[in-house]
Each structure stands twice: as structure tokens, then as C-alpha cells.
Image (tube, one colour):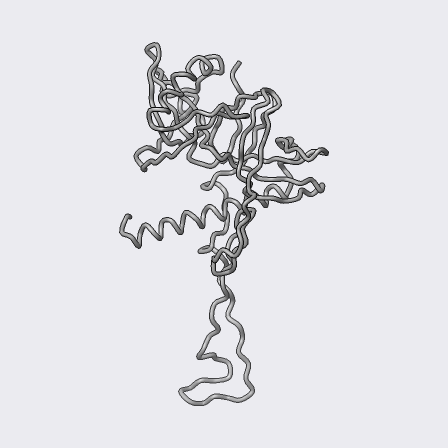
Length: 283
């Protein structure tokens, strides 16, 4: 049985628990039109009224030789647990920014970072979560290109995949909802690739980062991680336990707003990184 997939920021991802998964149409960084710091509306000029006419140099009461300074652009809302002032200085940072999801299908846990905390329109306590460890997916090379690996085949290649990750000092974690890899991992732009999981090019391209390759029984496999962040929308039940949000809750305006905040913050972070690289002469 082929596992169902979750559309997380444009990256198709296979989960271990097909019975509890939902197709989450979360927009990608490139598809959501969010207003970044550089795209904030330009403040209108304030009118300058003075009963005393200024005649020197032809200046009248209707003109202002000293226009007011532009209004400061508000920074995007930081992730949960941080308090930042308008200059971007971190005032406080909470040490409790982790949460755990438990997959009811196999009782495996998935440690996550809390990115956003909010309340739904119905009063539910919700969170936008991102796995602590790096989510991974596996593809196999066929005559039709790189294709997803079925659940049955995936179970048989996991030991070899774990060994391939161990060669580059990564540890395969059997997490709930998805497989993850733990450890340091560096990559360059050359490691980013696009592919179509249907092998025909009819589906939307998926962007990923190559991590490792291995061969087993004359078949070549690739381990990759999605380029876009994998996010979960979770809601607390009556017992205070986090559960994956139901489909009808995903249309809640509060969830849309939380995703927009996350996207806007990530866009600013990328702009800052590009600016630093430019100043250092890396780009």
C-alpha cells in the first residue's frame, strides 16, 4: 500500500502513517504573496500647514522643505518564544520551544520546534510545528526518472539507507509521521534539484536537496530532504495532547494568518542572509 502524502510548502512527503494524514495545501515561499519588509506600503507625505507664509527662496505655506522621515517598517512577527524590538534586537528568548507529536499508528514520537502558537476561530489552542531533525525521503532511479519508493520497498531498504547516512555522520531516526535524519549536514546550490514524482513531468516539480546515494540489488536510490520546510498544524485535544488538525480546521483564518506570518518571517531571514553574503563578497 502506497502511503498518502502531505503537501507541505510545495514538497510532497511520504509519511509512515497513511491513515491519519491529511493533504495540507500549505503554500510555498514562492507561491504565497506575502509582504516582506521591502514591500511595505510607502507612507504618504504628511501635509504641512503653517499660517505664516515663508517667502525666502520662493517657499510658500503649501510646500514643505523638510519632509517628515519615513515611518519605520514593522518587522515580521518572530517565531514563538521570542520577543524582538523594532530594531530587530532580541529582548527575550524562551528555552521551552519544543513540542512532541505522537503517531497513533505506531506510537512513535516526532520532536518538533514550535514556530507559531495561536488560537483558532473556534477557540482551539493550535501550533505550527517544524521537525527538529531533518525530514528525509527516498527516491529510486528508473527508466522514467526518479520515482517515489513504495512502503513495502522502503522497509526493505532502510538498513542500507541508515548505513549510507552513517557514512556522512548522520543518524536515521524512525520518527512518527515521517523519517528524519539527525546530525550536521552542509550543502551547496549544486545539491538542489527538481524532479517529478510521476516520472512524466505532468505533476508540479518538487525541489529537494541531495543527501546521499546508495545501490541495492541493482537499483540506485537517493536520499533527499525537501527544500521547503515541512510544517504540521497541530491542535490540543481535551486532554491537552497535540493532534494533527482535521481538514475542516485547515481553512480557519487563524491558521492562514499563522502560515502567512511564518512565510513573511522566512522571507526576511532569506533577505538578510543574501545581504550578508553580498557584503562578504560571497555573491
